[in-house]
Length: 285
Length: 290
Image 1 (cartoon, rainbow over the protein chains, first blue to last red):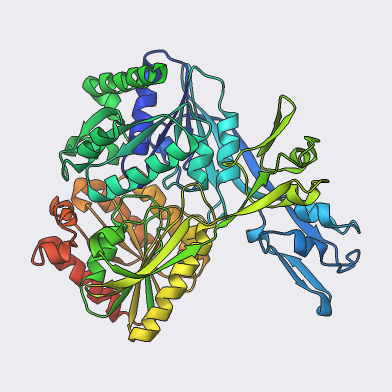
Image 2 (image 1 turned 60 degrees about the horizontal axis):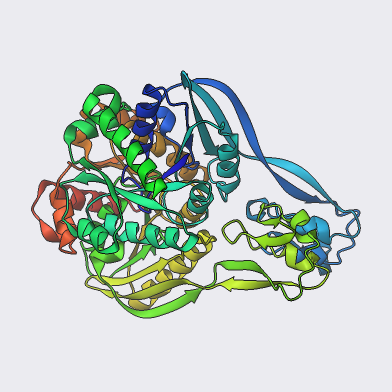
């Protein structure tokens, strides 16, 4: 079973829910893998320290144009849909803008004079960490400022073992990195908070998941803050409320120190196990 | 023109709260919400949108099955694993397609069309203290960096027209493409952090990004009283790298209360501790004309 934990808005508690759910499940002896898919700002390892088993580099192939072989026909420039090739035929100048390249291979197909070769560029790493029997943490991490984290995320998810339970801690937002993550999940747990910002971004996430046809339910974090609009909206839309986590300074304190509330307070490990049961039930519906 | 960007790396540390506060401190402001993926600032500032424009974020491939021979050449060329052959039928996954158009170019029978992704929008209009530009990237679409540029360019145009001195840029989370687009060429970078292990970790990454563009950053510690020990560690780190700490904001439930009434904390409780501190921060930011 693959569960993605996501939210449109940042800072609602994706990492909090993912890490605690993972901890509760592995404590019960369920072979689990947690994949940190927030590759631009991965944080799960701050909460779940582990022994690094191995580190893989993720590379992108970047074209290199040999201007000795190049006939300046301009076909690669025409084929590139990302404006990643600067082409000035009068000056016999041609160059690849590496930051804009998506590694699609079109220029290589376009070139008829064999002037394009490929070089590798590091765009991130995937670290596999052993965190206790029988669980593993996989962390996707992009190099800072890399154009898109999607290739790193996809590779990290592939790298996850075929454990009984795989939890994907998704990146914020609703664009490509989010889609690349939830696309692989059987079920999406959306984390929100009962504030206007939380509700607004929850609606965006729900629209997106409806569009791609993924089942989902909602966890309301920091319950007690804000107002009841989110509950009314969930009721109106008949969306399952999977769990409520109260707004509590103890939780905030524990989280801020990089610790897990499920480990320190058995009430919460039970609550996260219930969340897992609720998701299973939802999937059977 | 003074462009000030508010960033944090980690989401939920208070970028929009701080941007909204700045945006309601003075008259004749221009605000650019560059979190095009999950724009929220408009909920507080409630601009009257006079402009609504379509933004084409890219294209996606679609097979015309009346022409397709299911030869699979397109699938062999696709680097995004977006095309697969299932039971002899070629299928394109919309969520994986990157819009590179290579499949359409290599198709021997011209069966693949490229359709524009045109569901994204951007908006501009007046709010109570000036002008605001924001956008809404359609679900699953990319090129958010380009949309950020569109938003920023229009904000600059508005600032020129209205003789505004300052543009406040509310940035997106992360360290990727839209963040890079949000900070290139700005005058000042304000990094909002919170005293948590993850907030601190993300602060270091976003600082590194700003440094790589030779931009001077300064730091605001939000909710500093939630973990004083961690706040102290952040301050020590800032000292080590000579990063000015502009201010420390206490945790205050009234921020959410104000939000429920579409008001920044400056408008909701102008004399609160947090509002005073934000005013001080704003003065410091503006006093530094280097």
